[in-house]
Image (cartoon, rainbow, N blue to C red):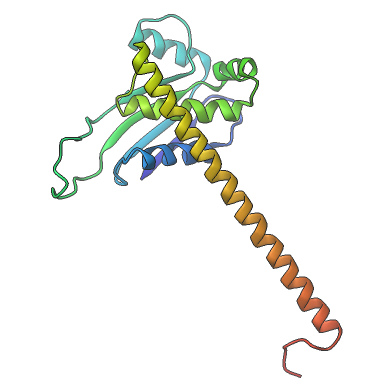
Length: 186
C-alpha cells in the first residue's frame, strides 16, 4: 500500500505514526494493498479555502477527504486483481486540530491520528450526516483507533523485550569472558 505524506503546515508533527494509523485502518477495512493514498498537512488559510470551495462553509476545519476512484465492492471474489487504485487525499490542519486536542484533553498527535482514521473512513464512503451513520462511523473509528493503539503498544513491548534480552546476553558474555569461560578460541 502506497501512502505519501507531505507536511506543508509549518507545525512539527511526527509523520510516521500518521502513515502507520492510515495503513492500519486501510488494512482492517480490507482495502487492496495496491491502493494509493495521499495525506497533506496544511496551514489554516489553505484549509479555509478548501473548506469554502468544496463544502461552501466558512473558515478552516480539521480534516477533509477527497476520494478519487470508486472502490469496486461488487467484484466477484474469483475475479482477477485490479491494478492500483488511487483512493484519494486526506487533508489535515494541525493548527486547527491543536485547539480540538486541548479541548479533548489529549495530545496533538492523538488528535491527528483520530482525524486520519476519520479521513480514511470518509474515503471509504462512511459519513456522519445522519444519527445512525454517525453511530456507525464513530463506532468504527473508535474500534480502528483502539486496535491500532493496542498494536503500537504491543510492538513497543516486543521491542523492549528484545532490547532487554540483548543487554542480558551482552552482560552474560562479558561475565563469562571475565571468568575465562567465553566461547572464543584461545
